[in-house]
Length: 329
Image 1 (cartoon, rainbow, N blue to C red):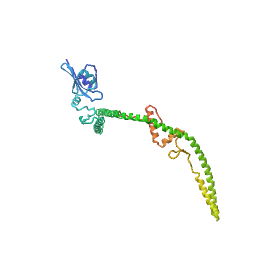
Image 2 (cartoon, one colour):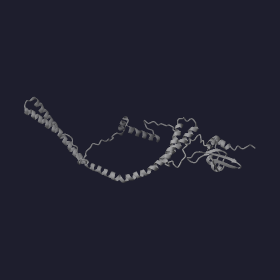
Image 3 (tube, one colour):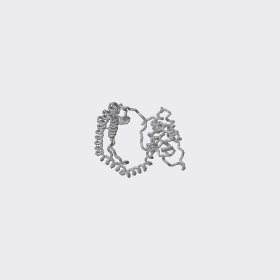
Image 4 (tube, rainbow, N blue to C red):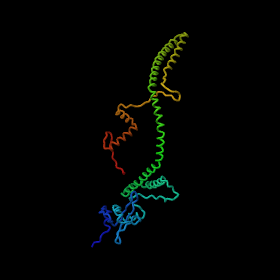
C-alpha cells in the first residue's frame, strides 16, 4: 500500500493550487494568519498521536479553529522558521524597535505617534534609496505604505478630537457676537445707501456749477490775456493796472472751478460720494479669451479644475487632452 503524503495539500497550496477547503478538516503544513490590521503570525498544523495539533506563534491553538483562517496563506518552512524566530516576513514591512514604555515616559498620544513616525521615516528613507526589483520588495512597500497611512489617519482623528473643543467654543463665541457684528454693519450700509440719491443730486448740481464756473473762468482768462497783450504795447499805467486786475480776476475764477464733492456729516463722521469700479461682463467668451491670453492664474486654475472634472466624468473638451497614468494606490 502506497504511503500517503500528508504534506500534499500544503505543497500544492504553495504551488498556487489551494483547495479543496472544508471546515474542521485541517491539513498538515505551515501557514500564517493575522487579526485585522495586525502583524502576520506564523501557524504550524500537524497530525500526531492520533490527533491534530496547531501553534499560532508561540501559542497552542485548536487546529480546526485556526484552519479556515490560515489555509489560504501557506508559507515555506524557511519563512515559518524565520518568522517564529522573530525575523518577520520578507514581504512585510520592517518592524520598528521602539524603546519599552516606562512609567516616566509621557502618555501623550502626540508624542507617541511622533516617535512612531520618526522610526518609520528613518527605515523608509533607507528603503527608498533602493529600486524595487522583486515581488517581495513590492509587497513590503505595499504593506508599509498602508501602515504609515494608518499613522496619518490616527493623527487626523487625534487632531480632530483635540481641536473639537476649541471649534465648539469658537462657534459658540461666533454665534454670540454674530448679530451684534453683522446687524450694525448692515444698518450702517443701509443708512449710506439711503443717502446715495441725495448726494448724487448734490453732485449733479456741483458738476453743473463747475461747468458754468469753467465757462466763466475761460472767458475771464481770455479777457486777461487780451488786456495783457494791450498793456505790453502801451505806456499808460492805468492800462497796465487794469491788465493786472483782470489777471487776478481770472485766477479767482479758475479757483472756483475746483471740484467740491458732495458730502454729509462732520469731521470724524463724514460721508462723501466715492467712485467704486467693477466689471460687468457683456461677452463671456471674449472676456475669457482675453483673460486666458493674459495668462491670468486664477482663471487658468479654474479651467484646470473644470477640465479635470469633465475628463473624469468621461466627457471630451476641445483643447483638452485626456492623460492616463498608472500609479500605485
